[in-house]
Length: 110
Image 1: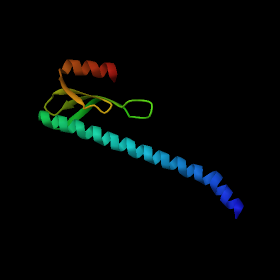
Image 2: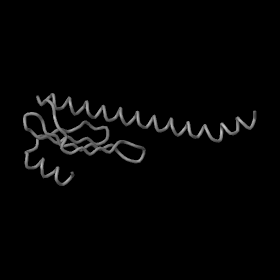
Image 3: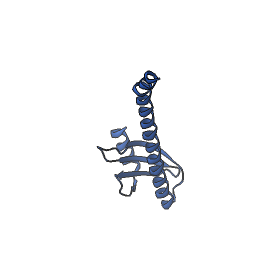
Image 4: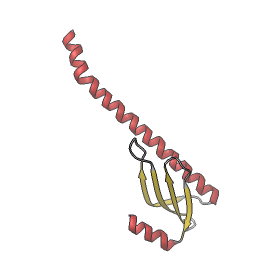
């Protein structure tokens, strides 16, 4: 019986711990991304923009050694372009872009 408990502690417990850490990390990332998407949609609604297509989508999720960064260029249904940026916990910034600037930024960051 003691050998079974020792084997369980030595083999199974580390695997379960790693699986739990991975699941928590994935949940945290999904929650963070949903928060970003909701903030972007709210900002677009304030401008009267409807649906959109992402032209550039660069996300750096938060971790213990880096700050969260969001850099998105979008194209809406009315043929307008926007830049959405967010750094850390500060509010996101949504700015209109000309088509030329948006496509140039997409070319440089794509």
